[in-house]
Length: 235
Image (cartoon, rainbow, N blue to C red; front, side, top):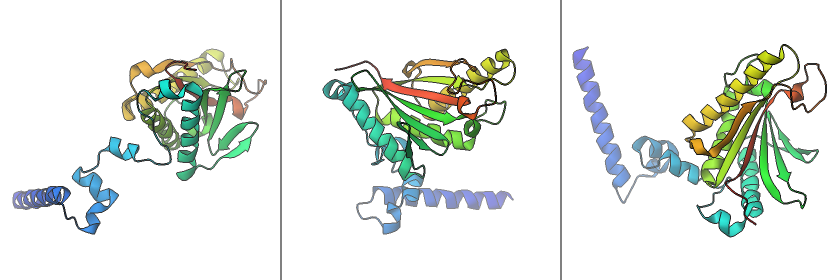
């Protein structure tokens, strides 16, 4: 067993050195250009990979001042829509919103139809098991899109709100909705490295903000909302 481990270590070191040599070589074999190899050898970092997302696009620090809030968010809106659609979440227009599987993308505009915030609504039944605040794999996939967008558009912040239907005790629903909003924040903060100061509000509201006014188990009322806006309003 000891001999096997020693041989295994030697082989690993040989592979590692070989990999580094090829990463730094001017003439690389064609197979070293693959995304898998690039990640393995450390030639491409996760941050560089995100910046290479042509569907999402990106804007540098200072672009908000140059573009103004509405144009800045227009670019984010188009990029986020494109990123969702190219990764297998096509949208259909419904009631002024873009609706996809488990997610909805809405424009929040002022009285003069200028874009002021984006609203990403994640279906509560898709995002969490019934009565729990643990994110599902699908929820993490959808939240990753928001995290990538906030990383690519650094002059943004967000507000997160958890909502339930009216079935059950209000106190339990309020607690659950708060825990769910915190779960979304943790995913954005710990996995996608969104800084604490970019979270402007994280709270739960039980059934205080219903979409459908009913005391029944209404699916549309069970949701998590993520509002993404700019760090300030620039005209």
